[in-house]
Image (cartoon, rainbow, N blue to C red):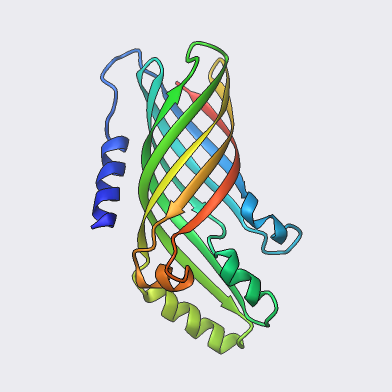
Length: 206
């Protein structure tokens, strides 16, 4: 049920296209770092988040948006810390799609703060090493066959710097994957999975 609700909210946000001819559309690409996983910095598999989004102006200070991306690591610290002392290396990433609404504080200014809220669906991907090549492959295949679609919600804020058709986006995002599938419940020990991101994006308006 939570998956259906989140999917409906995301679809409604993405497909509300502004009717006004003067409304602008923006396309952005972004990279992000999960600040709750900075202890992995310097490792060959340091988790980097990335994605893209499209947004539409519906009012001077209101935008609707759709976003697709990858969260490099959603493994909770309570699980990851004990594993760091073992030969087993477990990585859990998430691909997601979501929709939402962004509110601009000064839409006609070249620099404007903003806040936003989003909802969507995430799909977990599991990687395991340290058990032997054959066992690693079997474990990954088995885990990734399990239904891993979970509702995703997010909030964030930041600053947009806009000049001509170009714009820069520097901000913070908090995303929570609500443990709905069997795999996410086991990985999170019954708790929701979450990440805190510092994000930098570059985009164009037309």
